[in-house]
Length: 123
Image (tube, rainbow, N blue to C red; front, side, top):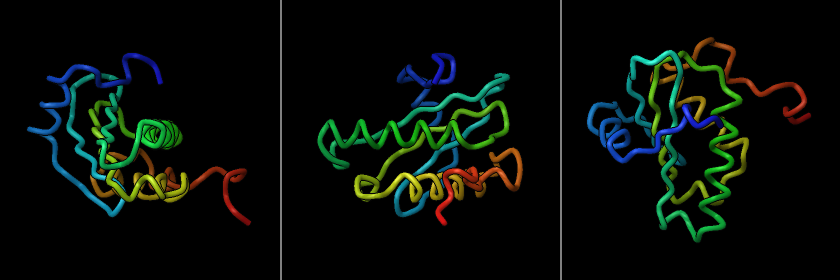
């Protein structure tokens, strides 16, 4: 993920928490907010409750990959917060959860964008 696509400053996270609307599922919570930029920015939060450093990093890697595989509208800051149950979830479960939350938040670019590519689908 490119540098300009990441939320890095604590002020950016605070603004997203303050102004963004919350959508939640059993695995994730998202807080999207319009940013007025021509691109999206993403921030990932995994607390110590998710697990030790190795587990938290694994969850963040999966979330980054899931966000990159989805087609989203431009101009959004999205904070993705992993819940404790995300540590045991598969990539597919996390991606489906994230896609449904983003669709509920009306951030998805197209209706069919939440489907996995053919080579990833199970037979």
